[in-house]
Structures are given as C-alpha cells and as structure tokens.
Image (cartoon, rainbow, N blue to C red; front, side):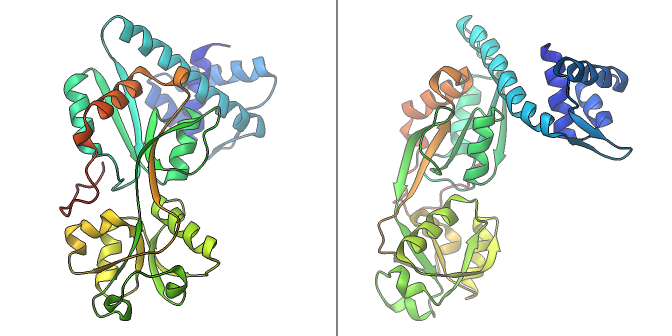
Length: 308
C-alpha cells in the first residue's frame, strides 16, 4: 500500500469530489482516479459510491478513512521528528481551540512560537471541545485547547491548564441582580442564553443542572461570546458562564453572581500520546510551560483578548 494512494484517498474523502481533490493535490483527475482504483483493488473493496454529481464513502471507505488519517499523521510526525533532530523545526502545527478559552492566550502564544520557529506553518481551527477531541484523536490536529470532555485514553491525553467557577450573568434590572450566590434550583424557571451543545461552557453548565436534577430552557443559542453578552445586556435571558467572561468590557454593565455547585470549568490541552505527538506540538507546549505570562490570570478585571 503506497502512501500516495492513501493521500489521494483522503483528499477525495475530504472534498467529496474528484475534480476538486485533483486540483488541490495538483495532479490530473485521471491519475487521481487511477490511484483510488488501485487502492480499491488492493483492498478488494469499493471505497466510494460515485454518481455524476456526488462522491460518498462506502462503509469500507469510512473504516479506512480513520486509519488512513492516523497513518498519514504519524508519517508527517516522523518526518518532522527527523528534521527536529537535525536542528530545524519544519512542517505544520495544526492547532484547535475554543473561542475565548481560559488558561492560555492563544494569539500571544502563537506569535511567540512563530518568532522561534518561522519555518513551521501554523493552522488554527475553532470548534467545540467534543469536535476538537475527535480531530486530535483522528490525527487531523496536533493538539487542541479545550474543555475536558473525557478521561485520558490510549489515543488522547490531557494537560491541565486552569479551572474556574461558573457565574450567572444577568441584566441589572433582573430580580436576581439584588441577591447573592445562586443555586441551580434558583435558576430553574429562567430563560437562558447559551452556546451550542458541543461548546465547553455549555457542557459544563449542562452538567451542573443535570447533577442538580433541574431542568432549564435555552431559548437563545449562539456561537460567539460577544453575541451572548449582548443578548443578556438586552434582558433577553440569563447566562451561566465561566467567571472570566464577566471580566470582558461588554459585560461591564451586567451583574455577575456566583453559582453554588460542585462543578468547575476546567480547560486542558488535548494531545495524542507522548510517542505520537509532533515535534511542533511538543515545542508549543514547552513554550507555554516556560512562559506563564501566556496563561492570563482569570481573576484579572481587564478584557482578555479572544483566543484565536
């Protein structure tokens, strides 16, 4: 089985189109088709269902995609490891992060990394924590800064970054605004502004209410922090968020109340096992460990810059 066959297969699987994949790989469409057919003959199984308009993976193709991505990631890591031994860090750093993640200033960290390793191409992707963990496990990302979503496995390990309590943000005219710390039961009848279910703050909040046996209604679902704060500012709902969200300038007119619960918002760096980590990922983590200034204090009342 040749690596180029796997590379061609993965490109078609990603683009769902032979012509687009061929253009991206800068090969002829006929050559790409021949490469995929050779792989299908070797595996004695069709990998794609082809129509005049679409290309979809077969069951065998879906099974191969997981392993092909992992193999190609390991090959890339091996090449980069050899370059690192020779004294030059090259290749690509593929990083995932949630928006406004606590415990690391992503922009500042990446700027410092680029100054030290200018020959490494940096790729950044924002997504929810669950999706980021899957991307690291599949080898599509070298590492991710996210909220802990699972225990360590033989495919993933986590390095703690920070943890902080959850707070309620509400408009100053809201009845809760004149009180003190609140419990999930106090919030049971409220309308909530929150993120999509895969986001770390949403996962943490859902866990808080599930443990307390309290149902809640998310009436407004957003995909960025600033929209959430604006909706709360207009009195359209309350939000349970990590404490550092309340330190943003947009939250300066809102009331922040502690939530009495046993759950905290815990952020981690998600990586493959040590032996599978790329040199670029190891270099980035070493830089983070050596520069605690790149992990802003979440008790600071200034507005931390958005991650990414």
